Image 1 (cartoon, rainbow, N blue to C red):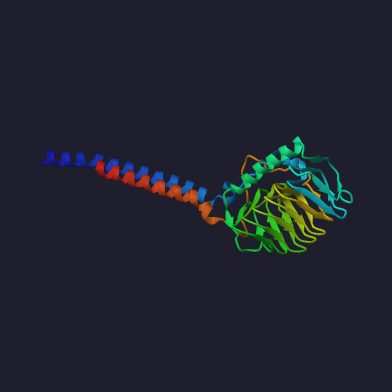
Image 2 (image 1 turned 180 degrees about the vertical axis):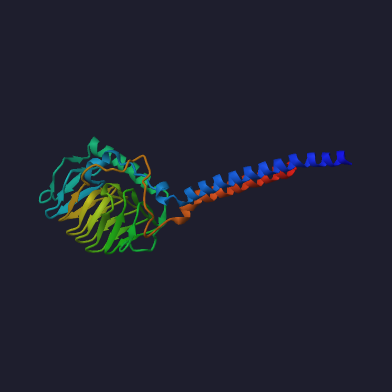
Length: 300
């Protein structure tokens, strides 16, 4: 009888030991997955979202268009002016260009080709927030990719906050009301703001706009509207009336090949996108835990 009891005890201990080992292993796997998921889930959506479109030599131009460039009044273009394949540039003077005019030459052609690349990069960027139907006026946005399925409107003030890339993907037109303004704060830079407009853009009178304005067709700047950035009309005309276009000054500190670090957006946040990596890890972790538990039971 004593020998039989000893065998039962001896046979039971390894099973319990194995079960404890598998349970400990399962707990360790769970903790690792949970911590990783928490970090990935809490990571700002914008970190995964926006990189700078590649404009190449188009960055050497303050104004670039496809068909014509026309001006009324004492507009000032600080930098180079380019036109291709069109050849009609009128209104200079009274307007002035501080740089070089490239009209239907190899330099203008290359810049236009690079504009197509940059425009396409912006159009294909992954959205972090859909603002369709919302006025940009009164918004306070952090770096990310903001989409409009059709037209976009700016009435009043738009504030862009934080050092990172801002991309606005607009399905059709962009229009600003008179006296509208784009404000930059907390490290935001005009050089890292991109407006990809699916048709034409119109900046209302005395608008103070910022960023690289890329329109598929035309850009019209109404009397007194000013742009800190670039006016880039791919296929159509650039029409000016007593405007100033000034490229961003200084070096753009956001690298073209890396994603920006951004704080959580005040408006237009993309929480569902930021949660996705964590959700995937939790599902994978759950499967690993279930597998470990099954092995533990088989080993008993």
